[in-house]
Image (cartoon, rainbow, N blue to C red; front, side, top):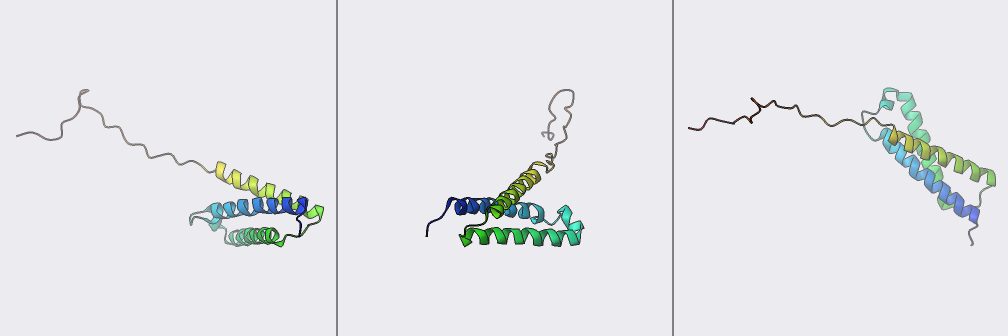
Length: 118
């Protein structure tokens, strides 16, 4: 069985799709305080759709059949969308600043002494 270039390119496109969809799935649903959990129906629908996308792309990788050209173009478009979504969700996260330590003022410009010596 020889693999045509279209089969290999389709497997690459589906690999990129699976990896970026898994990254997005983990990014969106990976923590309990995610904003999507405020919308129960949207959370279930998005989780189902992303899971089906991941399963379909992995099945296409292992299938090794030559797809029609239109399906190949569709796979590239969906893979590009998921790569962009995955990248954008990573870039657009607000960076939480590190907690600033309060400055302790020095007494008359001299360091404070801890305890009296006896």
